Image (tube, rainbow over all chains, first blue to last red; front, side):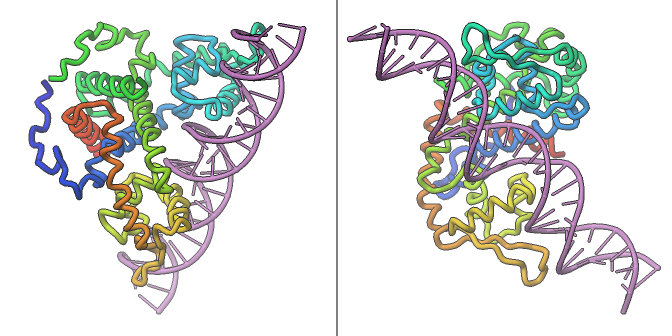
Length: 158
Length: 158
DNA sequence: TCCAATTCAATTGTGCACAATTAAATATGG
DNA sequence: CCATATTTAATTGTGCACAATTGAATTGGA
């Protein structure tokens, strides 16, 4: 499938020793650059909602399941408390979530959606389609790429 | 090839309207998470060289072509001066590059490698193979994924 | 019971990342 | 030649991202 670029030159498919450090031969840089581009494409779509891209990820996690502890969010998003704590405080200041200590276990902080946070989901509903459009990639390739990346992540975490 | 997860459920391949905002259905999150994982995998390999991951990207760009202006580096890496200027000052402080105003056009700052910066390339030579190992992905899939991501980036920039 | 180990969030410090602004140098049109 | 526009880095301010530390709460084992 995807009869894709069988035009692999020897250099591209199996770089010579001296080319191993070329930017174009790095999967990491391709990932880094693509991730940055996609994040940047979200910015103008999220700005009217008052969310940054990482905040949008947190809200999506909460729209799926809430309340959740900081730890549970961190596991879902692969982020630690050093990143999440200030981000969640900003979401709290914006009125989208609340933070309260768990009564049973005071170490845990439960993050809950406010009405405004739940309402935001309606406004966000149009974002995935708007962004998919900007990818200029057929849907089946998007699905394929996503699965490949999820597979990569699963293997690296194992 | 890649007999991969033909277990595509309907939800995964063509999510229902209510699932469009699920994290698992986002290409952006798959990219974001994979990029973060790979960057993290570099950290222990780069630490002995005294480089962070973005600094490593800048050094790779310079190992290909030097001297280069800040602007040229920014175009190669898709980063702006707000990111590069302090990063390059740290590389200068570490002794890997020099920064000097262009004699012909004083607006430009030429970034040149020092001997130590060039020497670092030998130590870095083993990194790509070491990292590829941690990806737990067959080489042909790495090459494939890289090409797909480069294609995505090309389309989004066009 | 008591104490040692673990869990969890917050904090601190460093380093990206980018928008917006600034300021200097150069190019351009009249 | 001069005024204006453009180009280029640097700066400022906000917001991730993570390692390392801290401190409180909980758990588990003698």
